[in-house]
Image (cartoon, rainbow, N blue to C red):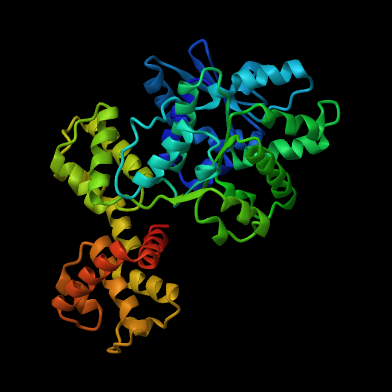
Length: 448
């Protein structure tokens, strides 16, 4: 894949809705040549739906190419060389084609994703360390398979591809195959109907020579029984061959309905690491780092405002930065706290509405199997008091309400009660694994 399209794709994922990304953008194959980026779509419907986005794609392509670049939409498949680089799921019909495909595999990894430009924080430190270990010692039973799970836009794909890039850099000739789950599924379905190209045998063959297999978003295997069956056998073969497997999922696989029990069991063989929404310090560091990468000057107080008000994920922060850059360029104004508040008014309002104290109370009550009124009751039984303390601590963490305001929302409790609850939960989360698990799951649910 050319260098320009993957970087455009990353930015578009931050700016567009998940529906547009997965149903339209991810179906495209990019071919860059002669100062033009041609995007090949599977059908005319996709072309028509994407036309309103062409100006933005052209703007991004020009930015990343460093020179004017026109964008053209077409129906069809990218030329052979571009297609081989765009997807590692090429079905080859003979040994020579298989060898060519294998040589092209490392180029499927976006070189922009590295460990060096990944902003580390408490929420992702363990995941980064695990990914680095998988790159340094691929196939080691301790982290094979390595599963990175968490909500959208938290850096799972970044770390997975960074591990692939690090492995390629450390081992001459290493072959790393990166696929999105839908690519694996589509290639498998194609192989089922392919007779002249070798069919299933050719599909299986392409995995034998890889040093590492990276598959993104395995939750999309849910309900696809035949795909799961084939992945199960592929998984076993790679593990037996001590080839590294790195996977991502939007939640812990045992929570994914529609995944076969035996596949869930296999995924538990290695190391599963959660990536949680970044804390305040990490969000601030991300804003400053991403702004620096874009050549955008943001004062520290403006970056802190964004970090304090945008809490969900890295993708939202990147989208906000894109908005700031565009508005600043259009108006010629410097980015200040006041400019951020004005330019991101609607985004900040939506963020406030998404995570409210009422929403936190409902989520916590549902999680612990309690009635909503338990959050406001005077009962002191541990089964009720502990969830109520969780809700108060989450309100302190995820909203900008003061301690007295939080206390008032819990049937007029004193602010000292809220402070005690926050200290109590903080201590439990640091010392008790189950409390930490509950806290992390609630954070993820509230940021979905």
